[in-house]
Length: 163
Image 1 (tube, one colour):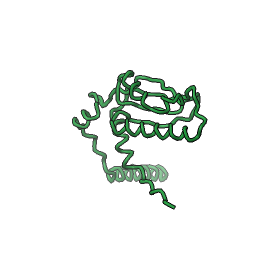
Image 2 (cartoon, one colour):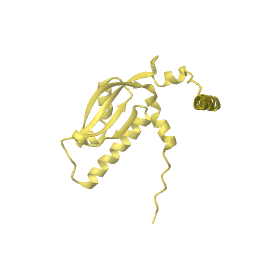
Image 3 (cartoon, one colour):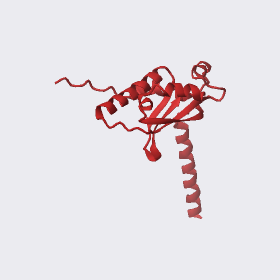
Image 4 (tube, one colour):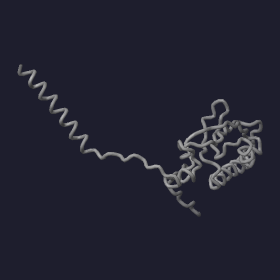
């Protein structure tokens, strides 16, 4: 009988402790719908929008000259920065190279022809270093905020030393 009473008492204490700790947690408030933000991001009523997903794959021409290759990739990064500043590029990044897949772009358009016109300006495409494969993609309109947020979390680069 004593074991039963101790068991019930212990169970009661555990439940009481759990409810006390639950009361001390700060409750997260539910997100508040922001119609202006949704409109500025091109969101539909579900917070979604159309994009074009671009897979960048190894192209038919590998540039052997190191200086030329460096110039092509410098232009590639400049092109991505320009598209991002123009709010045309939501997300970009490298892939692991498996099956010749080198990188992705998520472009802020639902129109593949428009996406092709934006990608056609990239030096890696112009040179044949890479080719692009296009897919319609539907995702959160919040992807349009990635570049702004990234700028706030990227550490500033130290100035190059001048020796």
